[in-house]
Image 1 (cartoon, rainbow, N blue to C red):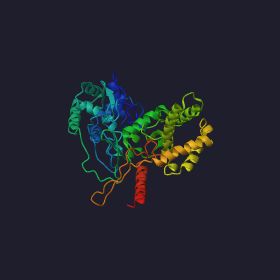
Image 2 (image 1 turned 180 degrees about the horizontal axis):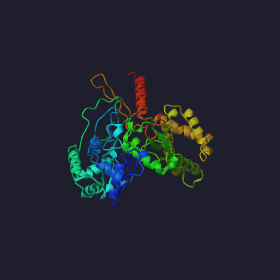
Image 3 (image 1 turned 30 degrees about the vertical axis):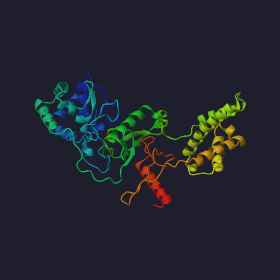
Image 4 (image 1 turned 90 degrees about the vertical axis):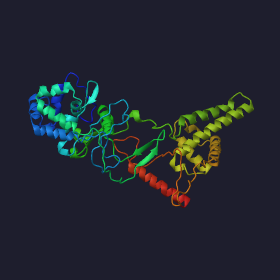
Length: 411
């Protein structure tokens, strides 16, 4: 219940019992006979070596992933964010709080978080805030006043905020993409601990979508893996709630819209209106058809560079034939002529907005491509990410894109 992979629990009315469990959980699970044994917890609180070892782990807790943006980084990172990483959730300040794998269990006593008095706290932060309820509970279990004062003085000497001073240069440059309001999204090969925790919690409720990934020497691969005993729950298949378009700006082919357009165009043959009105309706319907077919062309990587209207119509008819309701319009001479006319319009009015940028200092150039979308990207993702390609995959796409630009522009 105090694992990083689970949601924090409320210990209201059971503070002593929860503290006893936190103390006993510093042992390996296989040697614990009773996690609520007060005698065992009392003996540990009387052990000065045990208390100092637990206090030592408190200085290595961090609020953000130490390995971001450089996976080779080592140190402690405790920052106060302006807003929560996950809106609606309390911000955590206790990730990866062991300097060595041997101390990972000892960090549970002072660093494992829970909800107390409607606040997300750990024993360490509660002692720093002089919470009388927590102090009285520790004394009731067996902690002496002298040891309590020693713990508080040691914890007060640990800075609340700390950053890594010497960050080595990134082995791979960070990929930054424009977001909203002049902000950027940065992709890193490192997965956030809190994100892994959210995935683990979700998969624990939906077993059909999850699989267990076993890690050897779990204490050396991160605090989250250690807290789950080296058995992380990961996505086995895409959950239904995530089977949606990730952004409304994506270019995709709307088959249902095309079906409505073609049915309306078909019904124009018998509509009782004047010839002028019929021509206007046909023109409007044709404009909608051009926009829809243009989306089809942009969503298919194999035909994006194709400019022959006849060849494009062949590929388009092939896609229509594979659709249950649209198949009746495929390979029909009347509609094939209509599609060829639409593709002629698309090819003739091909966008020319993308232009090379100015040369900077005579040795650099750039191309600005607004709203660039990537379709059918062949990039391997991880079991802890959905819809996000790996950094190596995105970096490979950019490298290939750069080579193609140089090849076409003779740079």
